[in-house]
Length: 326
Ligand code: 5GP
Ligand code: MN
Image (cartoon, rainbow, N blue to C red; front, top):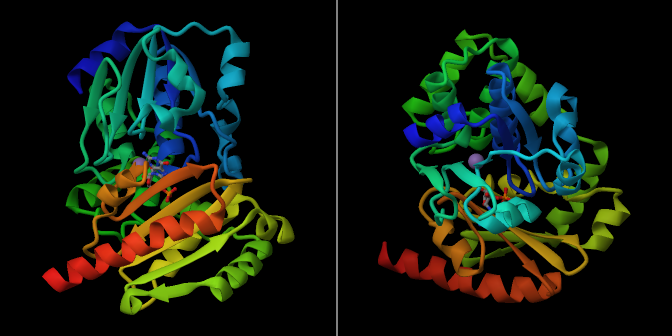
């Protein structure tokens, strides 16, 4: 962390990059770093090489975030690329092309992280990358006002399921409390994320429930969304990112999986476990990554059914193996 803080202090132009298919922790980490570094007088561009999910559009600074084309057009030449919440180069989209060309640093909390930058601070004991960002801001002596505290808090709340998942430890509660003391507004975040659903999402979810399958004596539940289904309900993958945790909430389920055809023949596999199944390792074995209780992979060139046939039997076998050992 010290090395990254030093590199941030020394740099004048900083490109802050988050991961593709951004979630709340990612957008929080990008925008919190962006706002803080700008306040220190740096020239900063926040960047994510993906369309920002519509629920985050009401955040004031979200429109500042550029994709790779926007970055190229800006003619900005940064001294440092600070990457947040990303475990591998393929997670940052086309910004990976800058690795080896400019100085790079990463702040990440993924168990499956593989070193790919000049400087890295990786600590999977943090529930959210935003907690690591909070510590960097403290080292940089940037004080939080209401806006910055709310932005920073969003990452902690979203990656811990609003302080409900096992990664919501004492440190996460203390960090959240600290940000609330500084003016952070949890209800602004919960209203934006939890109480903002479109009716079409419920209709799509109803079909997801109809298609749902239960395996391994009730330990595994999965369902899928094809391109046709997204079109039928006028939805995109932004609208279905929360479905997998709904499936996990079923009594007795240990692992929930959603197979989502986010583009033709591009299947995003989104996985959640409840108490004991290690999904990080499993996700890595199918070319993805993540955390113990939340992991994913993106598989191109196969149909939804082909990916289901590849993943489900293996998961059933692993679950049954673990149960027999227990
Ligand atoms: P989600 O299911 O919400 O898309 O992702 C859950 C977790 O798995 C996140 O922490 C995310 O970073 C990670 N993850 C999802 N998809 C991929 C992937 O394709 N590659 C890697 N390395 N990690 C992924
Ligand atoms: Mn995260």
